[in-house]
Structure formats: structure tokens, C-alpha cells
Image (tube, rainbow, N blue to C red; front, side, top):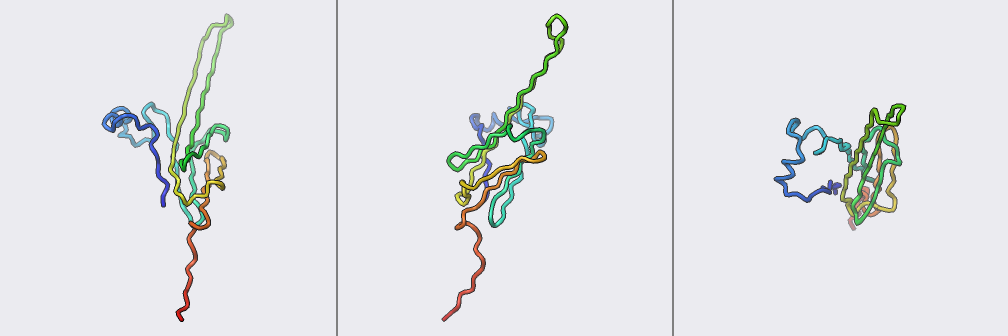
Length: 148
């Protein structure tokens, strides 16, 4: 069974989604959402023992992430707010810059995932999430049956 990406902002009919969420200059292929902020790429892989998610999010710290599991849905989110001010000697602003970025990705987990053993690690710009399978869901070795 595969992990399924869940769309968390599904409040507009699809015709309006296409009109307002697509950057017409790049045909929606850049990985940027409707306001020009990047949504991190996610690699999903499966072995006999586990599923693995890798989220590319350089420049963050592990404290920037929020991982939540609710009713079989794994949600990965992050929010970053930055503000910089420069004032002159009279206390007036000469420059004030601020930025805000956030993302949220949600995945429906198959029943084969052992939710008690999920683990995550952030290292070198990549958030790695391990989703171990339950013992009964793992691929069993081939067994020859003796005919009597």
C-alpha cells in the first residue's frame, strides 16, 4: 500500500483552484504555491520493513517543525517569521524588513504502519521520518510446504 498525499486546502472548486493557485509564468512546475513561497519536496520510499519520508527543508532547525499524527494522517508543518529593523539616531525607521513563510503537508498512512514506533530526525537540511510496518504487515519469507 502506498502513502497518499492529502490536499489540506480544498475549499475552492477546482476551476477556481487552477485559476488562483497556478503561477501562469511557469505552468505550476516550479514547486511554488500561489503566493510564491516554496513547498518542500518529499521523497517517499518503501522497504519490506518500513516506509521512509524525506522532506527537503534546508536552513531550518528541528524546532521549526511540527509533526502530528491524528486518525492515521501524518501532518508535517513549519512556520518561520523573521523581522529586521534599522533605526536612525532619532529612533525613526530607516529600514524595516520582515518575512513569513509556512508550509503544511499531510499524508494518509496505511494501516500497516506501527504508529507507536514512528521516529524523525533532522540533519543537513533533510527531515527524515521513519514509519515502521507492523510485524504482521511485513513480507514473509517464502516457505516450502511438504506434501504428504
